[in-house]
Image (cartoon, rainbow, N blue to C red; front, side, top):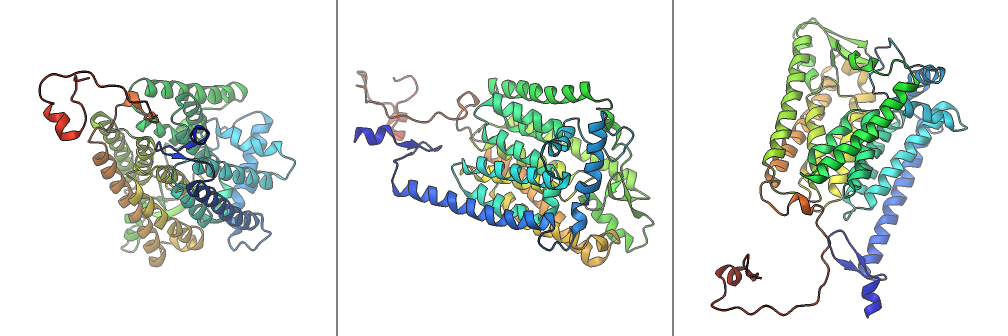
Length: 451
């Protein structure tokens, strides 16, 4: 009996699960079922991306074959792509583009293989969570984006973000992972917005700086032109898939004289009122940051789910107010929503459902109807508008639930994550004089100061 208790496994909720129990067996079976579903879906996705199975839209892999490979050749020659306005990424992106060259495969095949490995790494971290819902969302949603998602390095960044949030109890590890991810694409810095106050926040922020600094300064020292990306997006228009582009699609049917043109590496609207719309987007993003800081100031309740919940809210807010909303951004939202769903106390289930509904609409508008969307054909605009409405609704609902869910204190940041309760031998209560405290009578607990 004693040996059974000694080897019992303790879950994240503090429950003990004995080896060989029904709960242990069900947990193991669910993990294997999810892993099998991942293997089947990713085998199909990988073969379609390679062209072994029929890919009706091979254009989605051209970024790897031409753009990424071209940058890889420039980086390998000893420089960042100086003067190339389509290079809009922090210095750490060079690492993501150089890594495939280490494999004994053609560059596209090596790139797809590394992204598949990142996909698997994210699943492994999600399966470590108390709930399997997050892993199920990841397995189901990612392949719906099609071969495009293995043809962008956003999977690598998302996997690092998933790992950072999964390791939040160890702020040094989490901070380094966040920093490395932010050095590749800036958005993972938003993971810190939900870090609990006090020492853990300072420690996570410090190690984020260490991780990002090591990557950024390392590439900046090795290759010239590391910071050209800072001004590369200054004169961008409104990307035709962005939330802010929806009114311009409709306006084209009523005589708006603007046009969709390939520039800065994507299809963007250029013409009257676009500059003003861009300034509104930037102002809205500034307001997003103000709201998030206000939320941190008023937040009283911190749980295991607060950090991933806040990260999802923050990224959703910035995605819907951005001038650019490329289809690969959806994997950021899928990954963050999946981490939220690994925690039973999450506030973000409704937002996760809306994100899941938006995924097939994203694939529908790109690549299936992208040509029609560039021409602002009504059916394509309707699909895009539906997707963008879902994302805006997800952002608003996410923010509201995060705000309401943090109003009542549960435990302090100093106790986060909450320690796993341990059984303790009862100790004799000290002698008391007089009647019991009214608080003790009502709650069954001793009143403050009574023990």
